[in-house]
Image (spheres, each protein chain N blue to C red):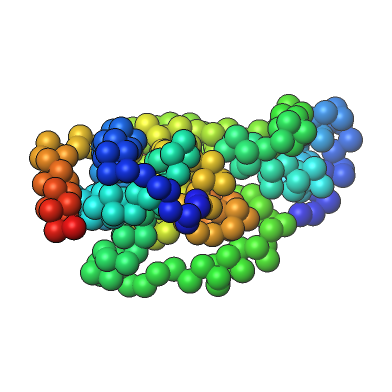
Length: 190
Length: 104
């Protein structure tokens, strides 16, 4: 994402905004909701994001990935303005988590007893609840990868982290998700 | 992680190798499990994808891991709530931007 300002005319700015970014409104709202888990906060977050997108539109290069650019602004706004307000105890200490994780690379599988049929039987809110119960930074990588379909490279740009970190954080997030689902299963009356 | 299977000479080789890898893991399993996520995310090279697909054709343990992770991705996509955008949101943004433009 280049920081070079593009020499857009006022008309071009409006055109780019309306044609490239306004159609992403529903996607942005859903991403905001998945981060904040609150409809009003999501609405505020999207408005802030779009205002920033408009103000900084000269740093958007036409023809590049508008959704990744917008989601990056949204994610940064969330971190700066919303995470402070929430009661979420503290940001996960990635370095620590990732160091622990990477040191155990040999056990890449982290065997859970989760089985395919068990997963497929989860027809209620289990999966969504388990995802929402993850620390927000782990939730975010799963949302960006599995729901939004971003590539590792796009995720690295949105999140400002190296691709290797995207991979390890995703892996860790999925293992946490599997652990939670496995716990649900063990504690359910089946 | 014991030599439990060494005594079962009656098993066919194929069963034995599948069972053994399930219990003990083999060098290929470790490699497979590391690459599997990348394959499922569509980020693997053709060689990596080939390796995983060949391996899971003969290894029950890795096949199961592969299927669980594939299903997990599908479930996340299917089960997550998709909200409609609030109807007034586009308008709110337009108003704020017109205010911004006037100020400037």
